[in-house]
Structure formats: C-alpha cells, structure tokens
Image (cartoon, rainbow, N blue to C red; front, side, top):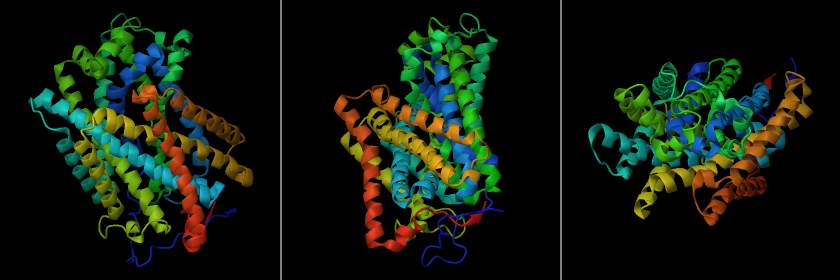
Length: 490
C-alpha cells in the first residue's frame, strides 16, 4: 500500500503516566453526529435566529439554508478525502499543517481555539436569556441572568469532565427532543394547511434569487457552526476512517434539509404574504406563537423548556471541541504540558476543560460587572468573531486540500474531488465576504464596533504566525511537533 509522508507521530506528553490519553473506541458514527449537530443547536438557531432570516431574506429564506448546506457539503468532500492522510485529533490544525506548513497550521490552530471559545462563551448569554424566559413563562420566576449563566458553566464542566461517551449519550437525548418538537410544529402546520394552503412560493425564482437571500447567507452559515468538528473525535471514534466521514455528511445533510423544511413550514403558517410581517412583529416569539397556534399550549411550554436544553447541548459540544484543540496543542508542546493530560478514569481532557471553564466564568463575571446585555453584547458580539473565524478556516482547509491533492494525486478519490474542492474554497471565502458586507444583520451595532469585531480574526491569525516563527527560533523541538499528525499507511 502507498505510504504517505507526514509529520512524525506525537510522543506522549512529558511525564505522562502510562495509558494517559483520550478514551479509545468510545463513540461511533451517530455519537459523533449527535455531538456536532448539537453544537449547531437546531432548536436555538430556528426559534432564536430564523425569524431574522425570514424578516431580512423574505419567503426565500429556506433556500439560504439549502445553499449554505450545499457549499458545506462540497467542502466536506475534499475535507473528508484528507481524513485517511491526517490521522490525528487536531481538526483544522492538522489538515492545514499537513498541506500549508507548520507556521500557517499553528496560526490556524490559534484562530480555531479563539473562534470556538467565542462561540461557546457567547452562547452563555443566549442560555441565560432563554432560561429566564422559560422560568418566567412556566414557573413565574425572575432569576438574574448571571446566576443562570454560572449554573450553566458548572453543568457544562461536569459532563465534559465525565468523558466523551457520557456527553454523547446526553446530547443524543437532548438533540432528539429538540428535533422532535420542531418536527411536531412543522407537521402540525402542514396538517392544518397553513394559513392559506401549502405553497412552494419560497422556491420560486423571484424568491430564491432575491437580494435578501444573499444578504442572510451569513445567518445561514452560522446555523451550521460545529459540523466540521467531527475530525476532533478521531482518536475516540470506533473505526474512525468510516465513522468520521459518515458523521460529517450525516450532520451537514440533516441540518441543511431540516432547517430548510422547518423555515418553509413556518412561512406556510403565515402565508407567503404574511410571513415577513409576522417575523418582523414577533421576532424571537414567532416560533412559540406558531407552535401554540398549530399544535397547542402544551407544545409551546415544551418548546420553552427544550430550547434551554438545546442551548446547553450546544455549549457542551463546543466545550468538548475546545478541550480537544487545547489538548492536542499541549501534546504538541505548544501549550503547557499539564493541559495535555487526561483524567485517569474518564480519559477526558479535564485540565483543558478546567481552563476553558475558568475562562467562561471570567468573561461572564466581567459582563455582569459591566452591566452588559446578555443577548446583544455577550451572545451577538462575542459570537461574531467566532463565525468569521470558523467559516474562514473552512475556506483555508479547502485551499489546504487542493495543495495536498496536487502533491499527492492519489489522495483525491475521484476526478471531481479537485474541482469540487476548488469551488468550495471560492464559495466559502465569498461567504466570509458576504458576512462582512452584511455584518449589521448579525450585530445590529455601529460601524466602529463592527470593524473591531471583524478585525479580531485576522489579528489572531497574524499573532499565531508570529508565535510560530518565535517557536521555530526559540523552541525548535516544539515547532517540529506542530501538526498532531502521525505516519501511517494510506
């Protein structure tokens, strides 16, 4: 069999006890899929953000989710073609290093860690807002948002500490429940014929190609955040060469079709003529009012409860992804060695999890002390650099795949792999540009704030490049370990 030249395998962290490492054979295809779909939080992005997509994109909003799904599916073809040649749990870090070198690879790793932390920590603001609404609606309680956020931090830390297999089982239950309540709403709308009968107006050319649909692509891509993290669980997967690609395509396929279906049914609930006005007037209450009307008050109550568990599932999934990035960087000697240790019994990267938990608590504490709004400042503003970072890294991975295929033509499984990967790179960088052009749709902030938020990702990337150059001079042994790849047969 052909031998692929890669970076030498990463030796155990210095002083690591025998057997120290991630838990092997812990999760299968669907366990990985549950982890990454949970990170996207389907109920949250539907009930919390889809009304904005309908308001700004018109009744063609379902097409935006399909378009984002198609672009990401094209990206996944090249991304997954490299999985047999990047056998490690370093995610984007590994793939970019393998093709573009250690300096760019480390910069990408730093961007990934910062971006995932922005997404995970920012969502505590959404958790606080949604939990406050649920407690008020269901129990008539008024609980300060920082109390709710700190409780969520503790709950996320606990399951992350217990190990990936425990977290995957919990996420499977939560994801099934939140998906079910959305499906019940969609079926209820169709069963009652919507507001004016079931139509396909969302897919008419004038709706599909309206300027509004182009403008909301940033919102649509944000709904898929986390799907690319399947590769982070490679070392913990059963039969990773099969499980990781399958989970990736299951995740992106399910989300694109399901999101489009749910948004289309909500348009039907108000009719082609009334959906935009309803989204504008009801905003985040749109889905709750819809399910109450078409299914019943019990379903509205259930949705209030399940949206809280949806946000929690997202936070746990991103927490797990962050911990594995930090763990691999520590294993490679870039970060302190103690972060590259796993729990002796649960085999979780618990020290990386402790640091991430402390970071989240510090940010929440600072926001509370400054009187920041948990939705506008904590969720929206903190999340925005994360969205830029992840979509930008997806584009960079597509470029890395093209470079790798040029050097190793046998890695491209089909003659179509290279042109498809090239198309995905162009489309992903176009998506980054569209997000920047329409950033006010995400942030509702002034020009200066938007400029600062957009500058974070490039500044972090440049800082990563400088760090890599410093490591090459000052700590060459650590520089040589960058990449988390290992020699193997292809």
